[in-house]
Amino acid sequence: MPRSLAGSLLKAVAVVLLVTPVFAQGGKEPPKMTPEQQAEMEAYMKAGTPGAPHQALAAQAGSYDLKVKSWHEPGGPAMEDGGTATRKMMLDGRVLAEDVNGTMMGGPFSGHGMTGYDNVSGKYWSTWTDSMSTGLMVSEGSCDAQKACTFTGSWNDPIKKGPVKSRMTTRWTSPTVQVFEMYAPGKDGKEMKMMEITYTKK
Image (cartoon, rainbow, N blue to C red; front, side, top):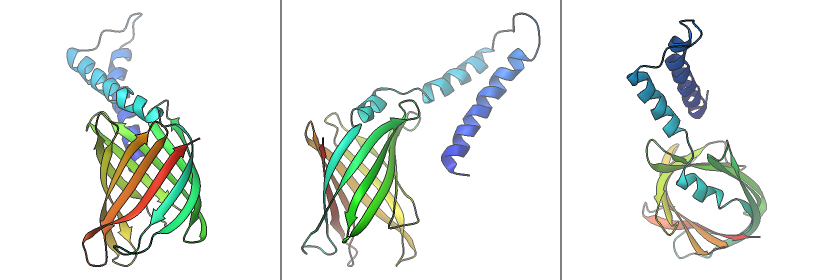
């Protein structure tokens, strides 16, 4: 069972356990929750209620044209590809889902990502998987008042047979153009820029 699903089910069960004793005692008017039960209920409700960070994500919904540049070694020539992306909110305004279609290394490419904001941790989170992998990349980060974001995450490298850490940044250069950059260790172990994607909103 995915951890996100297990977590959601656990929250639902916790709420039911909090409420059930109150309504299970019978009577026309169920007794009020204890102060402790009320506080716990409010904590769960607050954790699950979308706020300003989720509204900021919702503003990114729409269709985009993509220009992709990728590098295999520092200072080497960039490989250029193109594509499109569709972003839309899901789960009643809690998560921004992104579907990408295009080319990568001369072949067809598709990918799916999700971005959200965890009210409990106070951090943004992101997941990514695509047609060039059977794994999942998970990252976490923060954004400033100018909507510039920095995430760190990892994925399992097929050569090293283990996790590789990466750093991703996003920034809006205009109201309709967003630039994504990804950095990860090169063959020498030093961080290098591996990818740049320019999103232009249609």
